[in-house]
Image: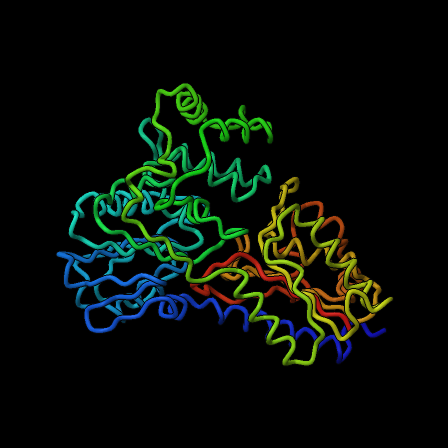
Length: 447
């Protein structure tokens, strides 16, 4: 078999086109406008309608990688009615706005810009009165971009805590539980600050299952996690000794009742809140499915809710691809298997990469020597780990080509160095900032 035959090249091209079809479905500007309509002075959001003439002020706040184009959509809808607006975004994830101020800040590790912007957002929410309306725009990355530390903690404490959590393989749900309990703005606290104003939160989901209290650490949503849960997470990953002492003491103080818990269901802070999901991973996956079918593939969506260790998930996808070729199950070739969600990487090496690139490398090893198989895994935000790549493309000849170039793929995998592996092969998948974020999209094609 030619490791990079014409059929492989066509499959790789198809995989890229399928990915972009999924991406287009969750473009934030369009997603907001699909859920919001303005008719004269009446703003319809989901199944509710608001008479804008009854509000003294209309404020816009928010945070996330996709919040700039979301704010652009809001300016298109209600532009001159906006009194003031502040939105925190990741560096370079910007848009040309007239009424809403953008503050670029650090992600995934928060920085001082994020802290200052968060303080300004909280202050604006506190200033809103009973007859004011707040439109809150939240998307993936919002947690890192709202790093307003709880009393007694510093930005440095939060930065070091996130680094430890990312390195130990904690899930996004677990990381956000910690974020909520070390923050003055997350876990429903932004809603508490905004009360009694009317608050509409438009949310682009980047978490498995679209759990509202997890997306951006749920600043406008009742929190289901507790200080006790945070301590259990620390114990689960055996990281208490690696965390800042101040953070551990803070969680212990919360457990003992010395610090108030985050607001829960039934708290009056949520009486005037409407949380609406405007885009999700499932929408991206189903749009990708439609494109794959149009390209002539028998198509199956495994799930948009896949979690777990990246290497293990990759092995499962590789096994399904090999099964398709050998037996025609669960569907005959030409086949396209789609999945979404967000896996985790337990870092044991010193290399460079991210979960999507590591998925592609692990899958490459699993499908090596098979008939024609192509795997593309990419982050819908255009960023995979601390790299300039969204992910990578691998095929059943990738390992052979790598070895011919003097590389040992397994060594690269054990060193978590998938970026340099695919950079050498010329198979990094680079999209640039997409200004959206609904987790990852995985495409496996078998002929």
